[in-house]
Structure formats: structure tokens, C-alpha cells
Image (cartoon, rainbow, N blue to C red; front, side, top):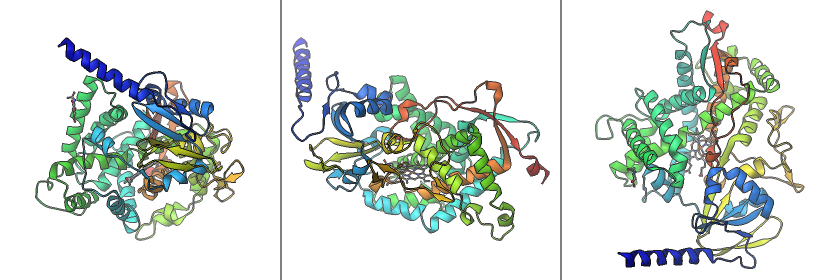
Length: 487
Ligand code: HEM
Ligand SMILES: *[C@@H]1O[C@H](CO)[C@@H](O)[C@H](O)[C@H]1NC(C)=O
């Protein structure tokens, strides 16, 4: 027994030594291994990636290599050089491990390119206007049914985050998934699962949390399974088309069921939080709220709603102010991390002509939140919400510079290259519709009873997982506008 322990310890020690003897070679980016063997910077990275990487950027510049939980990760923070990573086929986009860890899902037969093509077919073009129309109807119904049964002159109270997320989540679920009966239950269970998601991804769950996560995942698998998954009648929803796609690729029934949770997360986890930040910024910035409201007044909504068939007023009119507000919101609160794996040793060329050697097996990571999005050289006072940052008189502003070079990537909420969001147009249409509905149908105010008029801080553990979420909530009150309940 003692002997085994001794051998094991020796083995471990050897591993630690092997891992910690890496040295920076000529032509390699600065190497920062951190003090803790093997783990390296993993703890600091997980706690608040934005703060940590900003510190590393100050220390090393726009490119450096870190040790994180046994891996070496080269972080690139110069947006002018992003294309050399995004367009490179020797850098593979590998999500197998994450799918297994978070969703207990493996889809070995699914070709990423085929999946992407399927997604584009079902979220863009003809599908897009059909989905947008359905979404608009669901949003309107939910928003108005929310008010049913209560005295119209009485204020309803809620956290703004919960208000936005639950509405957009349920409307999105009804638009894409089959079972209309359990939207509220799915939302509730999803919140439990989502709150543990970053820890699942980092394998840092405590035993109890792991149990909760497993249980929650299984409940969601059941909730999302429509009856026809085991035979029975079929319809032609988005969900059903997706299942057919999986079947045709040879995915078995169990994995079909599990893949639905992945799609629920991908399609529903971003729009709600984005709408929260957008309305939150408007509520805390009068100048921006006034500008948006006066743009909406000019839209002539009455005109449009009397046409048959009713078309969405946002498709018929340009809304540069609202577009700028949305871009500015996402610049401040969308924090995707783009990860690639180095398939074979290679040279990375930076925009300034510098060349760096990358080692096979290492990872490369872009974190556009730090640069371009929060880079003071690109965006003046980057911490401040300026509703007209992306506005030229009547058009979108799209010329931004770093080192006098015009930037292709000046904000990157939707990712880029192979990692670009397939649902971008649908998401933009959805968020704008939601904001329009809320501002035209409700009187929405910060609830002064809670004594705070400020947006809550960001939950720092979510950097790298798409839209950020608040730590806490902003309490608001709302009621139907008078004009509405007299109709
Ligand atoms: C503000 C809202 C949203 C933001 C900021 C956002 C952002 C992103 C980002 C950054 C990615 C790339 C992730 C990666 O590859 O690492 C992505 C992927 C994706 N998004 Fe969105 N998204 C939003 C809303 C939506 C919505 C509403 C839908 C659909 C209903 C959607 C559908 C998808 C799909 C299907 C992918 C996967 C693409 C693939 O794997 O090839 N997104 N999104
Ligand atoms: C949760 O499920 C995973 C497998 O998906 C398993 O390895 C782990 O032990 C489970 N956790 C608990 C506490 O049961």
C-alpha cells in the first residue's frame, strides 16, 4: 500500500516537473506560467478573466502565452491581427470536450460545416421572417397576458433582468420548440442549470452543485422531449426539423434528446440578458431614453399596423438611434472568447509584421471584449455608455481606428469567422421588437423603493461565455400605458 502511494506521488511529481519545465524559445510570445504548478493561472482566470487578462496585457502587450490548468494558451489581443487566427485552417475549432462536460453530449457524426449550413438555412433568409413574425406574436401575447387580472392603474414590480429574460426566453421557446404547455417550467429549470454552467465548463463544481446540475440537466431533457420523439404525430416546427437533421446524420435517440438542451442554451441564453442591459442603460441615461423614444414616435406605428397582412414596423423603417444603442450595449456586455487549437507547429504573423512561433497542442484565444471593445485607443472612455457612439447623424458609424489603422473588427459581440453567430439577424430583430413593445405598451420605471438607481455590477465569472449577466438585479415597476387599456 505504502509503496503504491509512493510510486503514485513520484509519478505525479514527475508530471508536474515535465509540465513546469517549459521555457520560452526565441520567436515565441512572452511566457507566463504563474506560480502554481500545473494549474498556473487557472484560478485567477476563472474568477474574473477580464481583470486578469487586462493585467497580463499591461505586463506583456498584445500577445502572450499563459499556463492554465495544464494547457498553454496563447492570448492574442490585437484586433488588427485577428484574421490571421480566424482564417487559419491549422487552428481547429474543437468543442467536443465542452459539449461533453456541460451537456453530457457527444455528436461524433455531426460535421461542423453541415451543422452550420443547416443552422443558416433555418435562421436566415425565408426562415428568418417566419421566425421573426412568430416571435413578435408570442412576445406581444406574453407581455399583455402578464398584465391580465391586475388593476391597470397599479404598478407591477419585478427585477428587470428576470422581467426581460423570462419574457424573451418563453417567447423564444414557443417560437422554436414544440411543447407550448411547459414554457414557464422550462425557464425555471433552465435558470438553475444556467447558474451552474460556468462551473460545469471549468470542472469546478462542488459535490452538491454537481448533483444539482446533473438533476437539472435530466429534468430539462425530459421537459424538452415532445411526445413524437418516441413515435407519434409529427409537425414541422424548428425543433422537429432539427431532430430530423440529427436522425439523418445517424445520431441515436438518447443523444437527440440531449442535443435539444444544447440548442435551447445556444438560442435562448443571450437575447434576454442583452435586452436587460439595453433597457437598463436606457433607464439610467435620460438622454438616451429620450433619443430612442423620439425615434420611435417618428416611426408612424399606427400607419403600419393597419395594413394587411400586418408587417413588422421595424422592417419598414430604419432606426439608427436604436441600432446604435444596441451596438453600444453589446460592446459593453458581450464577452465571447474564441478558442482554437494549434494542429501543427506554425508561425503567426501579426499586423505589425512581428512573427511568433506557436507550438502544436497549444491553444489560441481571442478575447475581443478587452480589445477592441474596451480598448481606450479605439473607444474613448470605454467604460462609459454613450448611446450615440455608433451614430453618424442618420447612419451607423463604422470607422474606428487603432494605431491610425482603420479596424475591420471594432466590436465583436457576434464572434467572427467560423464562430460567428448564425442567429444574429434573428437576435437583432427580436431585441428591437422587444424594446419597441415595452416602450410603446408599458410605463417602465426604476422602483425607487429599493433606493438604488444604478445598474448592478457584472457577474465576473461569466467572461468568456457570451452575454454577461448582472450580479443581482435592477428593481423596476411597470404598468400598461393609459392609451393601451382604454382601447
Ligand atoms: C444578443 C444575442 C446574441 C449574441 C450576443 C450571440 C452571440 C453568439 C456568438 C458569439 C456565437 C459564437 C459562439 C462560438 O462559436 O464560440 C454564437 C453562436 C450561435 N448563435 Fe448566437 N448570439 C445571440 C443570440 C442568438 C439567437 C437569438 C439565436 C437563435 C435563436 C442564436 C443562434 C446561434 C447559433 C445557432 C450559434 C451556433 C453557431 C455554430 O455553432 O456554428 N444566437 N452566438
Ligand atoms: C454527474 O454526472 C457526471 C456524468 O455526466 C458524473 O461523472 C458525476 O459523478 C455526476 N455527479 C454526481 C454528484 O452524481
